[in-house]
Length: 164
Ligand code: ZN
Image (tube, rainbow, N blue to C red; front, side):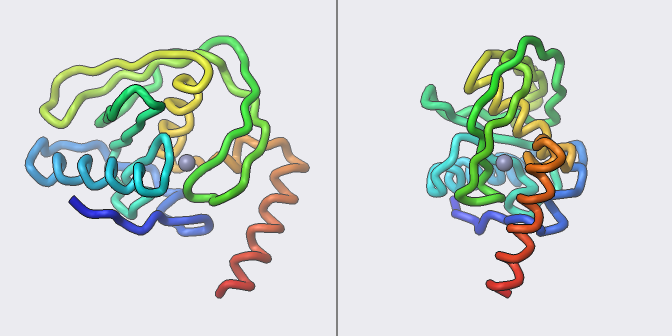
């Protein structure tokens, strides 16, 4: 297993829609193992493949109940509303109160192609939606209100220019 550098905004790979996985092979199992190791090292509660530069439709998560992964996830349903101070490993050390549906359900398959489904509210519901967004090439910045987003983008651009 290996720990990979996590891609951060404005890396274009984070804006790419991930491609469906079609080969359920050893390489996929290694990818999931590497993603889990990278997520735990960060530390974080969720990670998608594009965050380590692999444009495959895979995410891993652990909200304290053990490691899970979903290949080719589909967001099946959402309901309710919940505001949470949300952060992202690809936009490090920043948190914004973001309102999203409280409950969500995601289905997909595991590394062997078997059906999986995860559902929950509050933190689990949030992680599932956040990771599914990454699969679509959407960052949490897109979930901010117009004014907050403009200010966040300005700050992040200034930061990336300073570190460049
Ligand atoms: Zn994220």
